[in-house]
Length: 257
Image 1 (cartoon, rainbow, N blue to C red):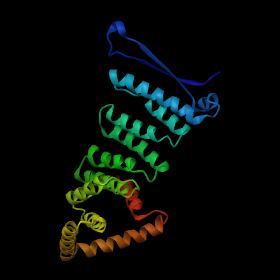
Image 2: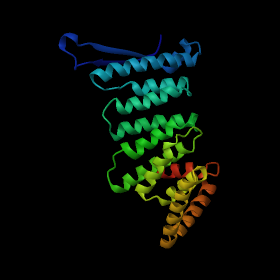
Image 3: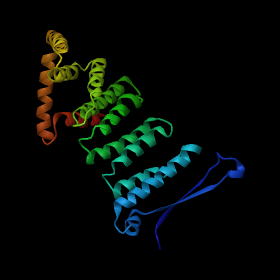
């Protein structure tokens, strides 16, 4: 006997004459693997089509996707490198229903799974940055600052990807300035200076860097930043020497969440 999980749903949002009972038969993952003769990528493709149909049906009527999580888990298990499923599922679960912290974190979990298989991708950390920096609602200023710092770390990861878009650097500088993260602003101004070819623009950047450095030195912040960076680097080498500084900082901030 084929093992299945049965889901029943009565759509009360339709007119009475059109009211239908939705019955979904969701095979166990091992059953899908068996029936697909181990053509797992093909099975994942079919499951993705089913997800789209299921999502579209509920998007039009009740915006409830009780079985969506399971569909996504199965598709990813069948083909962990199915890039489009990660992006589509995380976006659909977030914007296809009420945007609240619970749904945002569901979306984040899918993106974070994707990063395991696509560590050098640009789009995934960029979307995570948007979710943390713009979408999550904080209960207090401290939590808001923490969300924003995590978002900034993801934006920095996106900026360090091989296919980073030029606009991301301007975004990071703007966020760093807004948040008062002058050490991040200084880093990206230096980065832009090295890449800039226009002599007039280079001169303006050099002037801005000198102004920012002078401000930090006069306030004693530059020395504090250097000491803090030294302590954090020593801790990283002790705890997780296999991670670079950017990823270690991002993980540390998430643990504080």
